[in-house]
Image (cartoon, rainbow, N blue to C red):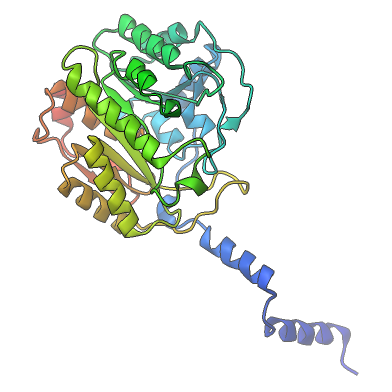
Amino acid sequence: MVPCCQSLLLLRRGLSTMAAPPRLAALRETLQRERKPSWLKVSGAGGPNYERLRSSVRSLKLATVCEEARCPNIGECWEGGEDATATATVMIMGDECTRGCRFCSVKTSRTPRALDRLEPANVARAVAEWGLDYVVVTCVDRDDLPDQGAAHIAETVAELKKSKSELLVEVLCGDFQGRLDLVDVVATSGLEVFAHNLETVEKLTPRVRDRRAGYRQSLKVLEQAAASKVSAAAANGPRLTKTSLMLGLGETDDQVMQALTDCRTAGVDVITFGQYLRPTKRHLPVSEYVTPAKFDDWKARADAMGFVYVASGPLVRSSYKAGELYVKNFLLRGGNKNNNFNFKTSSSGKQEEDDVRLAAAAS
């Protein structure tokens, strides 16, 4: 008679040679696919600048997309990294979005809280406390409001400019349900950079974004902003338009190239590429972890198409501080693309400054 422990060993060996049930095999494949590669590893958030900025955000009852969207760069951006300049993207109009995109971790509500009328002034006060000279303001979608919150965004820009006239302002906003009159309200509010994200290629848009969003609708928003840039000249129109694409959702190279062509046709100046990271198990799974080399390839392709600036890397997000630094210097130098201010992409996908002295001189 075989001892009990030996019987268990033989049983385990027999099971290991059996084919796994289809459902279990699919689960194993998903877990293996979503195991993050080494180039996506980041250090934990913390440090004196991080704590100071977080305290300021809490005291003024502000929200940041850094926290709400669980950005992997929050530790570096808030703490400031080697240059000790902390950056944050302020999210206005509350922390509840009326849309439910399948990639986004921001809370969803059909009836979000009323707008805080003090928020524009509080945002300006916070930015003044942080000592920034370039600020990114983003917002949730507010389909519950008659103007989708366009006037509130414009008021925030006005308050920021009132607090510091030379402050450079980038606004990352929604599509306003395709209402171009509301796009104009924001685009001509006095900001420098109008940003609206396509997020993904046309074929994947219905699966990735909320049903009320649309690929062609977003292109019309960007095209309208670009038209405002031209018609408003040096008055109140934006000087740059910007969008962002996530990779790793199942898109093909041909689909990405078509998106780049569509963006250039719409008049987009700046584009960023970043790796899609699944916020929770309730969100879309990652189809592929795109390598840093592939991100470099997309940067080269987009550069060749004439974009003013391209940020491309696994950890790059639509608002990343080195990208802001380039855009800031581009604006301060009068919009000259050939300004000898160059960036390179590290193996982690982050943007590194080549010439610090040029940045200091432009500041």
